[in-house]
Image (cartoon, rainbow, N blue to C red; front, top):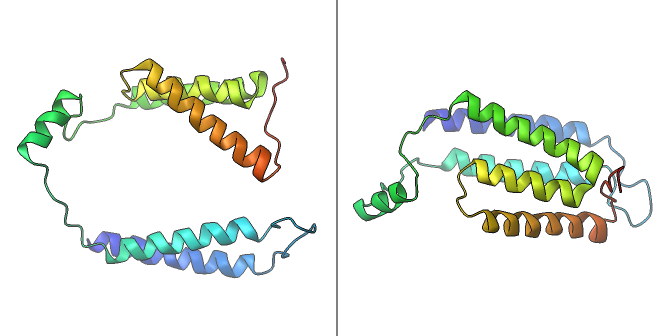
Length: 159
């Protein structure tokens, strides 16, 4: 628990330094646009909030009941399971290939394929569920950026 408080204080110090540095950013560069100061401000607020939560976290967690432990083991979740480096490298490789697919095929297609593959790699057993989740998440990001923020996402050079 002491380590959490040390990390929280370091994060809060980082937030204060970063907040001071962002005071020199202009409010806006174009009328009706959020401007360069907006996104760092949002990130700083969230970081400060979660750092305060971390500082006051007492670290007490309820241990799962016997029934919950059995259901987790049936789903394939093991306690203290070590994540091998080869799996991490494979996941990074899929992430890198996802970036290439986004470049060549466009954001929507590349993200759906890459995210579905990554979900399958981390243990989602039902492939249709991973595809549906990936599609919904991708469309959510697309609508947020393309429609709300009017920031175009990559369309791909092949199409």
